[in-house]
Length: 242
Image 1 (cartoon, rainbow, N blue to C red):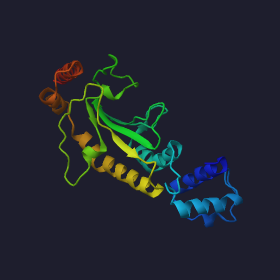
Image 2 (cartoon, rainbow, N blue to C red):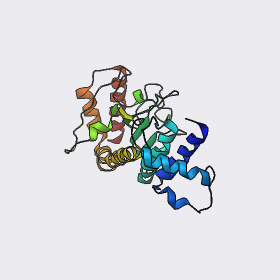
Image 3 (cartoon, rainbow, N blue to C red):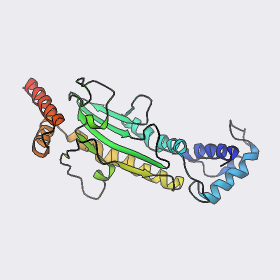
Image 4 (cartoon, rainbow, N blue to C red):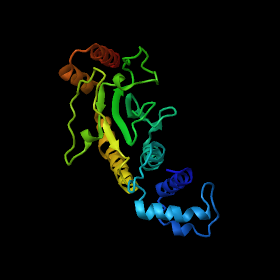
């Protein structure tokens, strides 16, 4: 794609993320940075003929997807009490000892057209696998006993999620193949993810106690080294509370 056309797509996606779908309404308005009157026909063509998505060989890239991700998913979660994890697209919800991360696993070289996410939960006093510091902010997925996906929380019935031991460095992720979808399809899925966080994931987190997690890991675990450490930490925490 040529540089001018790519610039037009950037502007279009920024407008679309804010709900602007009628480019003609911009005629006569004061041009904004990156948008001039001669760009409008190109933008109109992109909006009408491609639906802001993957037709005629035009695909969303990671920068464009992240614009929609921030507007349609991250910002609503920040309003629910989440914070961004440093300068990443991962989000963290910390309330008391309950520590929930919605962790983007894109890596340094993300796969084109694909965003991967893991839903990670721990109690904040648990020692990570990677260190002995429970307060470390440099946590990886393996540092969390619970490694879940959006699909685990989907469906008509309220999920009953038993502990799933995934301690070998391999775990399930929610894979969002956005590269061949329209902007509206991406926005719709982001809205679904947001509702799952609000209606299913946060209530599940709120119901988890230290006692129940100790019981879950003891019953369903595989006695891995990290699980034995977590059990020790739970027992020490509960003993200090009694």
